[in-house]
Amino acid sequence: MNILSSEEFVTENKKLHKLHVEHGYPKGKRPKISKAKRKRIFEKCNSQCVYCKKKVVMGTFDACIDHVIPLTKGGNNEDENLVVACRRCNGTKGTRLVSEWGAHNGKD
Image 1 (cartoon, rainbow, N blue to C red):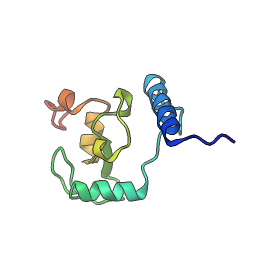
Image 2: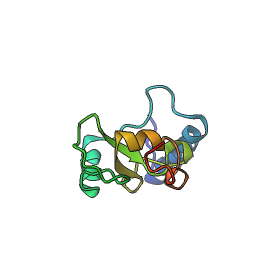
Image 3: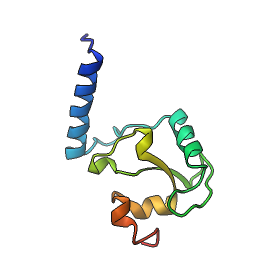
Image 4: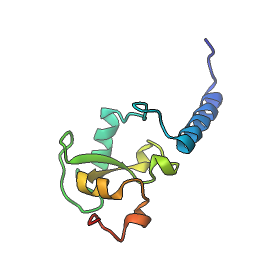
């Protein structure tokens, strides 16, 4: 078993992320967002969709975590790239950047 230094781990993680962005994640292998991180994101966003301002309840069907910069465009699961979105806004935004989707404002 090889043990990597912190610097080696970061370098390998960046390489792996780049590979996933270029080729997608294998089915069922998309990075998971922990419950603790979900809770932090809901607190950061005051439990409301950042796009339409609708209140959502963590753990319900209508509550989603959205990637501001989608994974397909180089985004990651860091807190700064995650926001709360309602299912409608998250679904209509899809893999677009907010600037690409903004004119639709969830009415796509």
